[in-house]
Image 1 (cartoon, helix red, strand yellow):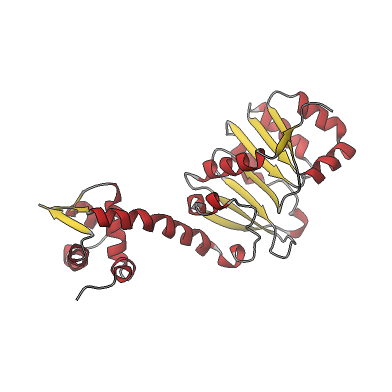
Image 2 (image 1 turned 60 degrees about the vertical axis):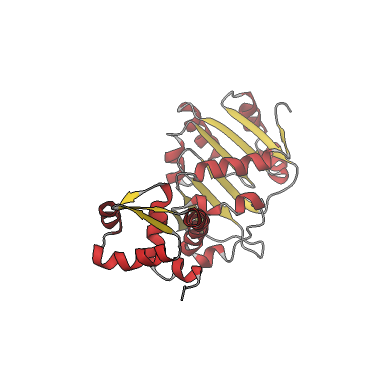
Length: 261
């Protein structure tokens, strides 16, 4: 009697890992054993189950996915990546307002990978994240979507410009009005600088700030009740910067360039 496919795929770590390992093509048994750090004796019964359920096929001493197996593996990976993201700190993700993420990017949130939460001392909640800035200085470009400006933001901008970093910033309507009232001279300098592109969003954001450099993303999110706390998240997966840039482009559609005052 055949097992339900969900049990075949997820009830065994070895079977699940074999499917994922074969996703990019045929592999010899010796390669599989080494990659999964197991023995032939332990692995063969699990591969037999995959073969019996038409997910894997054998050719000599190599194995590859069947058409059904490839479909299953292609569907598994995004799900497992998403689960990995939320397992990082489910108490954090479960209490954040994530409605600011458009549906097509929310489905791909697993692309962020390698996320970790950071507990920031309360008096530093609105301060610069030095680790992000260090990476930003090595980047070709930096993208920021923000509801606030940290106290020494002008100094950080100067440092990025000195490193020939291209900077694109979308600010909320409220922040734009605040900067024009309190930092008019700085805003004029930003507008004149060729390395900076400044935009005003048509409304306000349901988050504090999202910052993207060539290496990672820094997320500063609100709680579901609209308040903020001392936690931030950095994500440094291979596709995280591209995911962040697409989020930036999403908000750019409803933003207006600030080119003169």
